Amino acid sequence: MLGFLEGKVISKSTETSQVVVLCSSVGYEITLSKQTIEATFLNSNVSFWLHTHVREDIFILFGFASESEKHLFKILIGVSGLGPKTALSLLSEHGPDKLIQLIIHKKISEIAEASGVGKKLAERLSLELSTKLSKLAWIQSMPQIETTKTSIEFSKEENTRKDLSSALTNLGYQPNQIKNIIDKLFLRDNNSELSFESLLRLALKEISGRVISSGTQENSLV
Image 1 (spheres, rainbow, N blue to C red):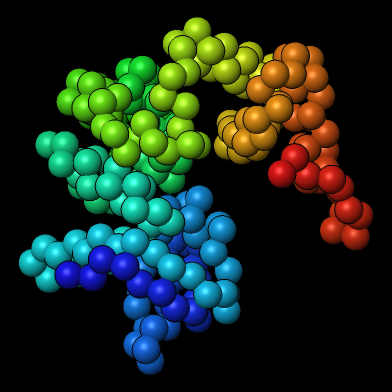
Image 2 (image 1 turned 90 degrees about the vertical axis):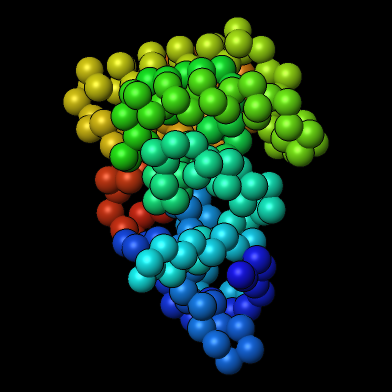
């Protein structure tokens, strides 16, 4: 089975979330998470950790930016009733860092926001994996994952997100648009310390920037 690959991106499709990577004159079609494919560009040199999924007449390569993300993917597909496409949907919706925190803190409703993941599956994920993930050494060693983050700190960000979503909904913006804006706001560490009013102003600035004509430049949050 293929486990790792380096090469040049010769094709990319955000619709299918797939890239073709040329390696030693062979093009490998690899399926990526939303975050990974957004950070992957045509004609760039890339390297991916791979999981090979083989079932009857199906042969799919799933690619990951790090070995730890691949490990998390394999843990997810070990849960009864959770296949590779659903596991990738979870990673695409939340990202590996946030997903781990959601599972550890048993945030059922947020886990279930991923496409193809209902409440029952989210509950099973939390039941089977919350303790396991909190104890794994490789998670403890990942600098980008705050495994010591308290439930109070986690709830603060969660509540702020809900308040922002409510405010933007009342202003007439669409749910998908709101979610994208709020996710961008919290990509920057310093934004999490801002007041609700400051975050709301940044969100409105980002939204207004998106409707400006293509000839006008607007600073982005990220």
